Length: 195
Image (cartoon, rainbow, N blue to C red):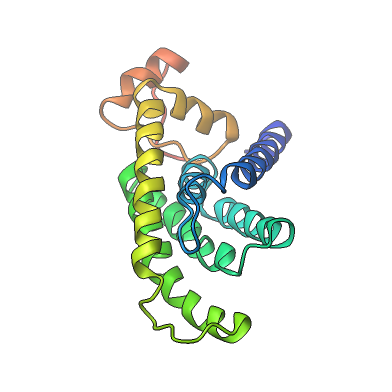
């Protein structure tokens, strides 16, 4: 049973991810490629799950569109990857590489293809094709995904990821090399259970 403290911690963490996502999104950004957004999506997916990650990506996109004047690519280039990243992470039993793959497929392919009609209809861009945004979206997801993979792998190896997940009250995936870290942190074996 989740505690009120865990709910509050999840909301605080979500708020921090949204704020961080808005602030770091201009780094390496060109139209159709925003690597730091993918870093936030994957990190949020692993820490909070697919639905919080989807909410995070949606709110970051809305803020970026209204405050920074970013086109609707801020939404189409984030929401599909955010959801798939979290879903792939859970289905794989907590594999970070699966979260990264979900982001690449969700944003790099699905989001890129959805962006074509959105940009043509809403923004009046002509001369686009279904595959127009795919190269830049995939490039962005590979850059952001690589950074997220490195960061989350380090956190996983030293037991910090497990500790974050436990405190946030989300799924805890304790396999193989992480069992000893869990025993050291908690003094007992943590099952791969959760919500």
